Length: 115
Length: 112
Image (cartoon, rainbow over all chains, first blue to last red):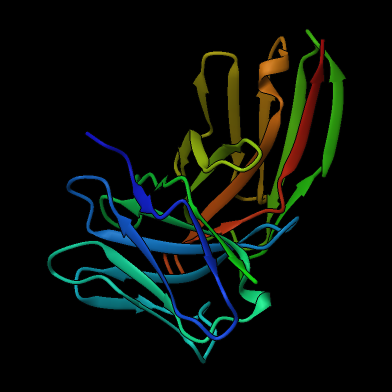
């Protein structure tokens, strides 16, 4: 049973380009979470999704950022018109469900560098 | 809004010492608490999960306790080794929102 898979591991984009980050949850997991870790800072929640639904996007910047988790395929975090401040490590986690006794498992992250 | 604090922010100890990492949270309405380890440039590895109804969990040389009413958890590492050097993160899953809220981490260095 493979763990949470994120790709690419490293992504370089020029200012103004689009970045697409992919996350395949662990097999059988239907809950996906995206977090951002800025250099020398902690992990900040961005968005919580279940299949085809956004449950909580309170941590997402209002502009340029969007996320989806389609019925088939990986979850996608999309950043349009990237700026230097978007450079960070983006982590995806998945869990079997929500609530009590649900352990979250994290991927290795995608490190985005905007030049 | 849930806030999680970890003390100390950094810790350097000689090999073989027993040590305690602290985590506190402001809202006791939580489902569970997880401790993670993060190595530089890597992802997060789950170490221990404590449900809100539990007081502690153990895995090898690691022991985590939870006092939900006072909003505190500790991670005890016995007989520390250089390979334990990493950043340790505490995260709580709150009733509100159902996502994990992380502390800032404790950066541990175990010297040979």
